[in-house]
Structure formats: C-alpha cells, structure tokens
Length: 503
Image (cartoon, rainbow, N blue to C red):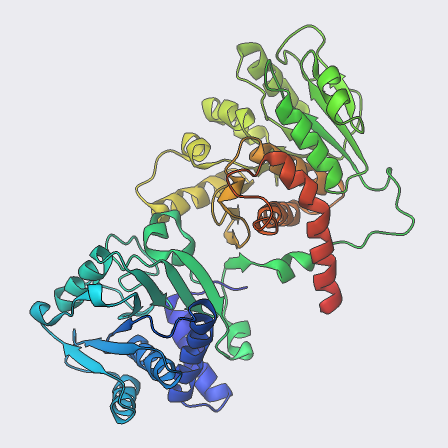
C-alpha cells in the first residue's frame, strides 16, 4: 500500500470527485460512514454519552456527518463545533445545517469559558483538524485539545489526531486512544515519537479512486499481507534439501549459545533446506539436544569465537547474534568480512563491532541486511533529535553504504536506498529475549532460498510480526517467548498461501 503526503491525499480526493463523478459531499459521507461502521462495531452501548469535537474545515464536516449517523442510530451524541476560524468549508457548513434539521444537539464554542465539561461524556471523538494542518495549534483549538488530553476520557480521532503534522515533528496534539484513518496510510501515524498521539491505528476504505491512487508516485509503502503474499515463491513438487538453500548462522559466546539455536531453527522453519550453526565450544551439545536437524561447526578451544573459518559453501549467512565483542572475536569478524561474498544479514554484536569500526562497513557485500534496534542504530548513525531527523540520517547512511537497514520496533521500517517500507504486523509480545535472533534466522533462511535481499527483509519482518498477531487470543503478550515465533512460522505460510489463492 502506498504511503502518501498530505498534498497527494488532497489531490486524490479531487481526482476521485472527477474520475468517479461523485460530489465532495458524497466523498465526505463515504468517509463518515466508514468511521461510523468501525465505531458501532467497537462501541455498542448506545447509552454511553458521546461528544464530537468538530472543527470548521472538512475534517469537522466528517465529524458532523458521523454525529448525524450515530444520532439516527439511537446513540447519545452531541457536537461541539470549535470555531477556531471565522470561515467554514462549504461541506462543513452544509452538514451543520443538516444536523440542525435532524435535531442533532449542537454547541458552538469560540472562547475557553464556553468549552463544555468533558466529565459528562464517556467518549470524545476528535474531528478538529485533518491532514492539511501546517502550523502550530493555537487559541481556542489549543484550549480544547489541552482539556481533551487532561480529561482522562477515551478519545478517538477521525483520520488523524488533531494537531499532528504529516511531515515534521509534533510537540502538541490530541492524545488519541484510537485513530481511524481514511484508506491511505500516513507515515506520521507510525513513527515512535507520535505514539502518544496516535494510539491504535486502523485503516478504513472510503472508496477513493483506485486510478488516482495508482497515479500517485511515492517511495514510502505500508506493507500488508497481500503485498507479502505476492513475493512468495511457489514450492516445487520436486524440491529437495539441495534446491532449498543452505544457511549458515554464525554467533554465540559463553552463556549465549541459545541465540544461535533460535536463529538456526528459525532459518530451517522458514524453508531453507540445510542449516549449519557455527559457534563456540559446547554448541554441539546444546544444539543437538534442542534442535537435531541442524549441522554444527564449533570452536572447540574457546568460549568465544577467535576464528571464523569454514569449508562449506552456504547460500546465505547470518552473523552477530550472541557473538560478544572480545578483541579476538573482533579480529575474526574482520577477517570473515574481508573474504565473504555471500548474501549476509548482520545483527546484535555484529552491529556493535561495526559501530566501533565503521571503516569495516565498506567490506559488506551490496545488499547486506542490517537489523538494529534503536540503541544499536544510534551507535551506527549517531543520535537524532526526532524521527524525521533519524530518517534523514538513515537515508544518508544507506546511500554511503549500500545496505538494507531494518529498524526494529513497533511498525518496523525497512529502508533500501530511497525506498521505505513500514511494516503492519506485530504486537508488543515481540519485545522478548531472542526475538531478534529469530528474525535474523528467518532472513538468512529466505536469502538462502534465493529471495532478493529486499524481498527477504520484507517477508521476514512481516512474517515475524504476524506470528505475534495470530497468537494474541491464545498466548498472552506478557508470556510470549521467542520459540513461540518459530512455532507459528508454518501457520503464517498457510495464511500467505490462502491470500494467494483468494487473489
């Protein structure tokens, strides 16, 4: 799915009116209906009092149409129209007239003392500003948002939380529990800095012109199940272990051999035919008792790797998990990088070593996948002021070193040169020890099967997150562990296969 700018979204709205021969009022009604259907499915108590805070623009108009729909369905709803501007959009004014005619309770507010007592309401629906906001909120709108945030009430934002900028850092906005956004993903909704404002984000289809969306150009994408299913290769009836690729997992040190076990099993469960684990003394005993399907090469003389040398020819390599940063290990890592030409994914201590020796980054094969969490990223690219500054620095980094960077976290980002993919799957359950090791193994397994590096990165990140999504009702997120990810990989493949059969 394309992620588009506020200007592009306005253009698509206008093109929808032209291409589909619908009025702007009809488009507003479509948007309001999409929100309404989401709302009545989630909130079925019609006695709970609802206050819709609407503005003077089209987002305010959306809110007023929602009020009309809820009122006609028997919900207890009232509109507070916040007059932060002396002019209303034509569609907003039209729907105010309709609301009056339908006896929807309306209150008009232009001064702080006129703001109603929010304690009288169970739910506040935010429809003050839309995606077009380009200046700091002030005056009566600021006062209303401040009181909303202080109210302790459930706040639901229509399209975007009011006050949130689409293309720069935001310091003040509505702190929504839910954001129901219209059809086109907006990058600002998925940035960590904006988490206090966005809450849970849901996309709803409002019937925008497919042709108009297709015409829009972008380097940013929100990846969902159908995108990942389209990348999946068919499994030949004549496949055997020799045709499905050989992944090598390098890592481990004293007390950290479990990371290699997790990554190795994840690689095999992701579909590669053979996996070899390369690690320190004792790895054979640990891996053999837990995961006998893997082959093992171990450094028999040390609790950490002092050399990385092998005579096998893997198709892809995952390195760095549990590796440690002993001086001898760092030297071995350098020698390995100097001679390696295979597809590569680097994680954990591999990243930490690279951050101490940034000149070694030039040794990485083109398309190497790096998988830092935020702290590891800061060691690689330096600190940042906010998410937009961070993204600028990431783009500079991946241009200087032609790597693919996966920034792990909620809505993990995959950055490949100018292109950014924001991932849709995953829950906080993935914040558990070994989760990153499993991801490294999954990426290595996909690389070994011959997937292009960017496809392997995108598929692994989505599938990794999806394992948590699908277990929410049977494994509490607090109890979810890394081996649960591995156990669910096959079920995620079933989902992707089913998606392909549907389309």
